Image (cartoon, rainbow, N blue to C red; front, top):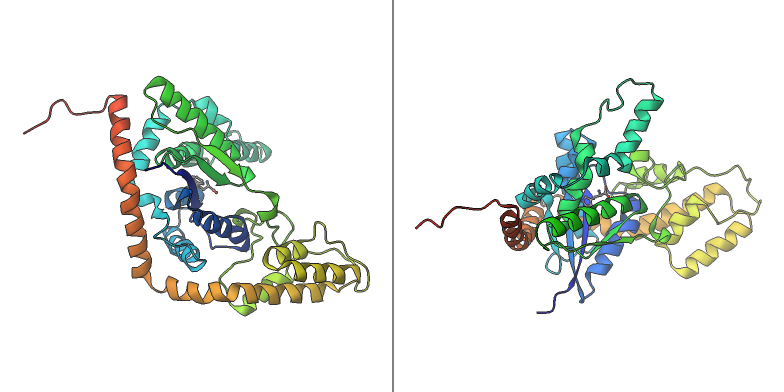
Length: 340
Ligand code: TRP
């Protein structure tokens, strides 16, 4: 069998799926998963959720919602390996082994940790590590274990995650050099800007900025969210710029070329912001309606989601078990004799 290139994507389950996830991660990953020359590993990074929140209901519900989102958007679980991180204990075992090889100094330089330290500095705290957990600090090591466990070749991520892939490469190379050449050195595939959607305030749409438009919501909430998008103070009749316009960018990622051209023309002719928002709302409602009805069906069929994930986990374990056995041996963790 020819070894296919492995593409691996993880989704932290600590929030509801939003439009930015859909256009930046879910839809491109589903499209990529249809390529016959690659194999796709997609997983719910549920233990990563604990880094961001300690609310059991949020983690649990979000896991179900994210799983249902991927399935509703057309992921074919028979064609990919779709699993829950927490069902693969070998990842956590590997994370420990890797942490024993990872330089603390390397992790001191992680953006997420540095940002937390700098917030403490700004707040005038004497303890610069105030409120920072080992989970946040170790997070890049867990991510390295997620990736190396399956010897992924390619990891599509946003720009904000690029550093984590570099750390993964560093940690893998250290292991390979020190013990045995076991791990594939992965490459990051950085999202093109096209997929990155702005949120309500014009910054990148992200749950941490609280500027998201949810994918699976009712008509009223969707309209309310769209109406909240920040615009400039140009009056109706004044020509508007399509560049750097949140409404236009979101519209563009869901509309066809003809519709985009026609909206661009209306911008030139001075469309009122209210009308532009109305057009965006209609477009979103229309584009999301099929996903929405599938989502409703799937999210209410917990047995189906559970079965799907368990069958994905069984496939993942077939890969993780032999690999962790090799790793254990390489580091000197092995039995003394075969018992009869
Ligand atoms: N940290 C990633 C994010 O916040 C999610 C993630 C966890 C991930 N493990 C991964 C992504 C492994 C790619 C590969 O977006």
